[in-house]
Image (spheres, rainbow, N blue to C red):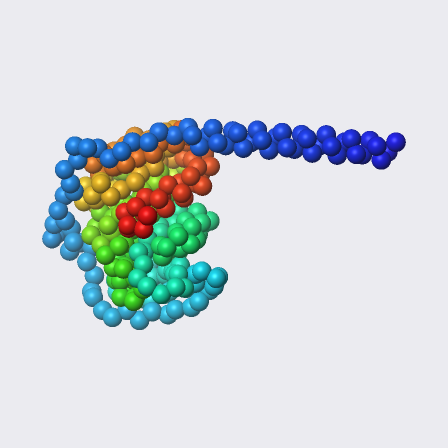
Length: 335
């Protein structure tokens, strides 16, 4: 009797498990289909020209890069190298420029996508995109952030230094990459989500070598995001400012006046025809209105809207990987 009950129970559990699995799969497929896609604005007339003053602001002393290279992983198709070299100029911190470079083992010249991670740590999304791309003919370079959290900044000047250093590090990473024999220097892209998306918009705006960009869950201005974001760390940052007598209006004015390295300041230099954006319709971390402002500043690029909030949108990652890969392959002429 015990054995019979056990078999029946197991069968019921298996049936229930299969039903639940089918329900989850059905829900997920329905979820992925619940997004809206818009092509680039057909009236778009092209980006602004980068002026000498802007390029001078993000300039740095040229020099021969002496990089330390360490192989950290090898598979049948690709190798991951940790590349590190001293920055020629430090606005923020004293760390070296660090790159995790995913390169194919076969010979030839390949496009490269610069991957901007979510935070100071190399997260699973950056690694996931890099593995996906390198397995499909596109080398990737994940740029490490400076070892510092943005929420720990204590002045508008520090915020500006943080973002301008990000641009500086990315440009030096490109300097290094284009000298490698396997890199097609005319086929460079950039991708990032959330804070990484903000950084991707900044480097894409400054450096003309970035031809194609995927900018996800990003917006501007930095002042608007800081004041209106529901992100816990950002809310705590604003609360700390209140506690020492600095009100929201003062925070907003300081950031607006002193943070020049802002997506809304640089987005107009990006060619909207070569951009794919992702926006979460109910985003409160990077508020939806801030994302729309960036989209408008760039010029109405191709955009996919996720019908979810900021964190919920990461359920779309498998779709975003495939869509972004298809975008880059089409732009790089690999299809």
